Amino acid sequence: MKALGDYVRTIPDFPKPGIMFRDITTILQDPDGLKMAIDGLIDFVKDLDYDVVVGPEARGFIFGVPVAYAEHKSFVPIRKKGKLPAETVEMTYDLEYGTATIEIHKDAIKPGQKVIIVDDLIATGGTTEAIVRLIEQLGGEVVGILFVMELKGLEGRKKLEGYNVQTLLSYEGN
Image 1 (cartoon, helix red, strand yellow):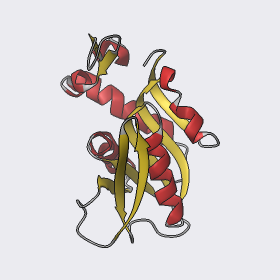
Image 2: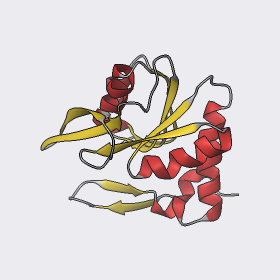
Image 3: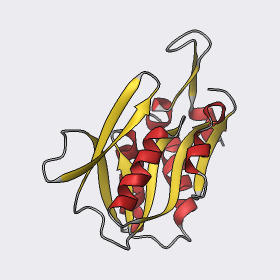
C-alpha cells in the first residue's frame, strides 16, 4: 500500500530555480490518495470538540468540506476580498512581495464557537495567521489547524505558536 507522500509529485525548479514544488494535484487525481488525505484529516479531529470547519479558497474548500461533511459540521469559507456577497470583516496580511486581503461573512462565526481550520499547505503561515485573527475577532475559538502538507523551511508554525497545528506530510525545504 502506498503512503500519502507517494501521491505527491515533486517538480524541481518551479516556480524558480532552487525550489522543489510539492504538487498536491496528484493526491486529488487518485481516489486512494484523496481518500487517504481526507481520512487523515478526519483522524486528527475525531477527538476534538468543535462546531465549525473553516477553509480558505480554494484548496481549503477542497479538503475542508469533506471533513465538515463526514463530521456533520458546518463549513465556513474564507475568500479573497470582494468575493463574498453579504457583510464581511476583512484582514490584510503581508506576502513576500506585497499584501493580500481575505474576508469572512460577519455572521459566519458566532461568539464562543469552537473552530478548526483546514487547508492544503502551511508555508510561511501568513494566510493562516490572518484567518485565526478573523475567527477570534468574531468571537470564535480556534481549537485545531490542519494541513495536508508543511514546508518546514519556511517556518510557518512560528506564526501559529500556541495553537494545535497538525500536518499529514512534512518537507524540510521550501
